[in-house]
Image (cartoon, rainbow, N blue to C red):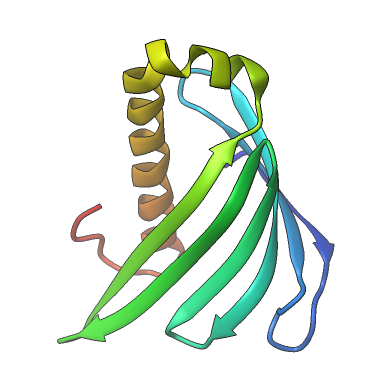
Length: 121
């Protein structure tokens, strides 16, 4: 993650908040998108609408079992970046590898920020 900027604060639960994210892949290409928070249930769910270089919806589901918190990220988005869409049939393995690295790094950072032990990602 290169940068996160809060555009709109939203209500007391964060519903309606908008944050602009800038990601730089391990190989150097950049994606910018905004996430509008549409639903939040404390310690259970966060859901939002994504727009920009990525469009679609994202949700994060949290559950606890035996003192372990499980986080499931559902990212149902498509890129709007022309060169990526044109080259996707050829570069699909490359994009998957980049995505895997970005998600693993995000999981590690989340664990560090919450002072938790990362079990798997």
